[in-house]
Length: 182
Length: 392
Image: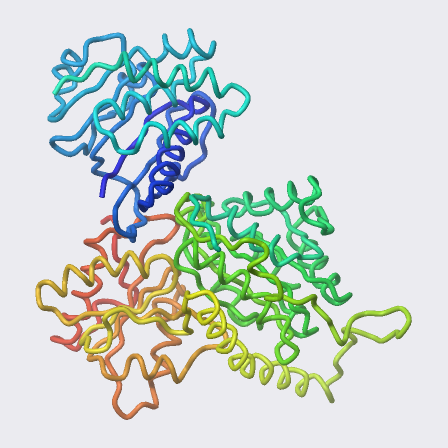
């Protein structure tokens, strides 16, 4: 089983990220759960969302405390939220940053790989809004092909029907531009 | 063929109500149930469900509208949680005593105070004696299936009682997971239109719900108790038929590796599957442990429960609710007393966990089995209300 934690700010689409990934995994015949942190979410405030993916039925229903992968949608969270907390050794941190992944890896003392992209820039250029969920999913998949890109693209196109083309373009661009530091 | 889809459990439950082709929905939004009635309101507004959606100013009125609509012969659905259910309390008694088969999806949530929007079973336990048939779902699939079956059970001419389907708030309601959803055609004929023999009818006027003077009240209550006990036959039939037709088998009491178990954990709701992981881990260490789930809460499945438990040495009952000043929780006191007359009976000990959204970890479940082990060794209860996962 793979457990993921998404960090974002309310309105950036952390919950949508967790959901789209689970939907793609389920479509591929896997078992998956996606859920928000069960609290009183507010626009702009730090939020979390979670995904579990497994080849066998998932029985656990607790929060995710030791994620295999962490996705950070907003670079400004780093100062206030301990995003790598509980992360497993050998895990993956996917992060929205202008910095080099090796630099992030050293600074945050990540005992695993870091995959980085300037997601805010891509989102602004391709979508015109700093909503980085789709961009960060592509970044994550660059480091680990949890689901097939085409399957995830299908759900992205469904969810963002009115701007599907733009979202898919942003998704593919992020996949190309993401850099991994092992 | 049923489709395997990823779906939020709340939406699946609302879809079950749509596929049951309900005539009337009346509800008041409350977390964590809100997505269910939101979705139904959209379906009605979009013309995808030909039903009356009665908006109300409170849950008390929602339940009043439901009982009234059911008395007029409508197929009725509502959903609530926590304080909403508590506010319905007065009217909850009316639905079974008037023999109106309302179906309620209850997203289980803690009660105030302190205010908590998160999951436990305090809400359903507080309404234990209102006379509703009450059944627990452990995951999204079960919540969807049991909502469909609830109409079939409640509307059966030999039952005519309201049914509440319990499922854990947030832990299930807000989760997207894989489910097999029926195509509408697959359910054709499963729920024929509700033909209510005793419906309010202006052409054939009758009185419903008059005062029960002391010369009839006792008999009315006796009849109501007979009715819910007799509903068990129909419940068994509906569960069996669903299993035969659709391949998913449900039982009033569910088992997991309990046949040869010395220590059994007794559960309700989504903790059942989560605790199975602990059973597997302990079995690997050679410990004879298992789980029995009390899926059907009312009518209480006495004999099935006794059969499931009598061969164990110790039963640890997990309550998701405290009975303040009494035995640890309502499930413990019911299970213990159900076994009292058995010549051979296991020791029974209780624990409380998962109040107000507190996660129950794998280690917590293992601790529950250890409580049973220690109780067997020492014969002493740890304390009257043993809370697992309490910060001290």
